[in-house]
Length: 149
Image 1 (spheres, rainbow, N blue to C red):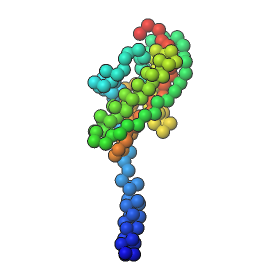
Image 2 (spheres, rainbow, N blue to C red; image 1 turned 30 degrees about the vertical axis):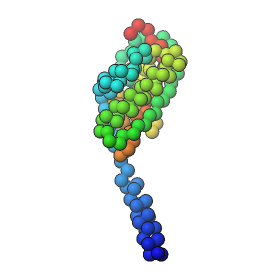
Image 3 (cartoon, rainbow, N blue to C red; image 1 turned 120 degrees about the horizontal axis):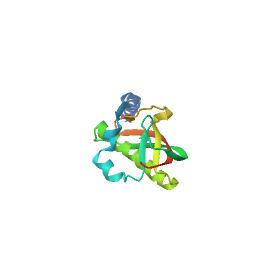
Image 4 (cartoon, rainbow, N blue to C red; image 1 turned 135 degrees about the horizontal axis):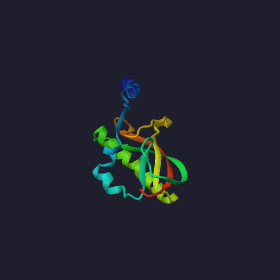
């Protein structure tokens, strides 16, 4: 019996030290346009809030209301990294859309990727990190009211 217990303890130690080595965190820079034009995005983003990434031209800003971060994760098990990343990107945009409506804003401007508080600016791409089971996107942006779009 003691032999089995020792074997199980040794096996437990071996497994627990091997697990961290198998963790995956792949960084992707994916097209914003593609993420915003998925079937789900077209169905769920209602158009009441416009999104402008840093470097994209914006209509006249009438009032800046505030700045916030949307940090979202999703289960990526059984999905391609690209599909999981587009899904979690949409989740971040939906959080911004909801918050903008609460604040009375009609746009989010100067949006940047903000994963682990590391700011990456691109008018065409967003940053996503995908692991074996979780994908994550963090965005930062300014809530504003803009003039005619």
